Image (cartoon, rainbow, N blue to C red; front, side):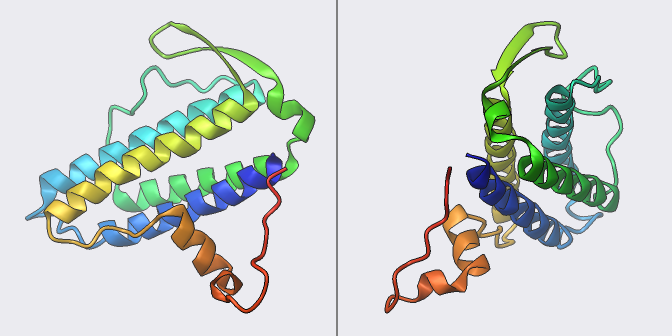
Length: 176
């Protein structure tokens, strides 16, 4: 399963980088509201990723909400998301596969109790980020900015161009 997560987190980092490239096209003056909303959405999924990283490592995250009171600049957020993506890539490369089924108890910021396996947490972070990237893509589309074409299939074929060749057996990625 850790090979699967390595591929998925490679995709996640790739999609995040592509999204930030598109956000640079938003005018800070004439598209201020949309830009702010997009940054807040990304900051939200970044904060949630940080919370789950803390849960995965048994540390306290210190967040009291699923977003921050202050809105970071686009460049600050890009650096933070990039660092988070690198952390998750390292984590999925080094976590012993037998630990992925470990159940971890934690508290949500609203005080509710939670319990998820490491694999479920890793899956949540990927799916949660994708959901909010889609929201930001919709904002870009409404502004006539072509949103990222950040599907998993596109990622696989861009990072492994041999998948486009039909005269050979397609490469198979181990999902074990």
